[in-house]
Amino acid sequence: MEAHGRTSTRRALLRSGAYLATAATGLTAAAATATTAHADDRRRRRAAAYPPTHWIPASTSNYRVSSRPTSYPIDFVVIHVTQETFPDAMKIFQDPAKQVSAHYMVASADGYIGQFVREKDVAWHAGNKDYNNRSIGIEHEGWVDDPKWFTDEMYASSAALTAAVCDRFGIPKTRGHIIGHVEVPGTDHTDPGPLWDWDRYMSLVNKA
Ligand SMILES: [Zn+2]
Image 1 (cartoon, helix red, strand yellow):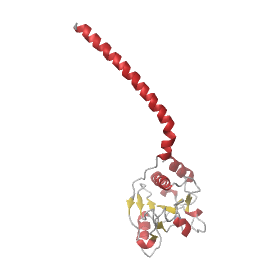
Image 2 (image 1 turned 135 degrees about the horizontal axis):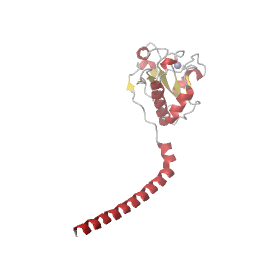
Image 3 (image 1 turned 90 degrees about the horizontal axis):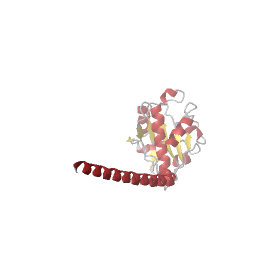
Image 4 (image 1 turned 90 degrees about the vertical axis):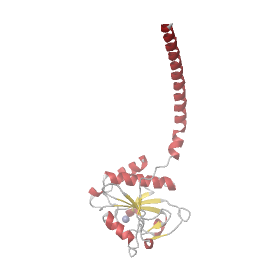
């Protein structure tokens, strides 16, 4: 009895195990079908998350309060290189006499992101009123002729930020909309310069 009982129990367990395995396979298959059918939709809907940012307000004399994207559509991300260290550029944004700011600045060594102006407000970074009105400005710590400032950490952090900005405002993740300061009409600035790796940057933005 005892042996028989164990055997019966074991058979029952095996049967129920087989049933559960079959049921699980069925569920997995159904889930896989659903995943395939809706993967594209989910990819489209999933917005890139903002990387960590740190609020370091610019002087209120260095930007214009606005209510974007209601007041102006936000169509561009403008990429800059500071030609200053992060701390020195930060002091400039906080100096009311300077009349200059950017929404964000990314540090070279670790990709730390400071935010100086709210996205709804108009930062003064592009040297072109129309482009300022319709863009988010991102500064990068370093010098255009010294690519050692353009670290992996900086590219990764900045690309994650740009991807999140683009998703938030529906900006296409293309070079027509993610532009260098040098590409702003009428500018005499050359940043981010020819040593900025646009192919790498755009690839990171689109993978974020
Ligand atoms: Zn610039």
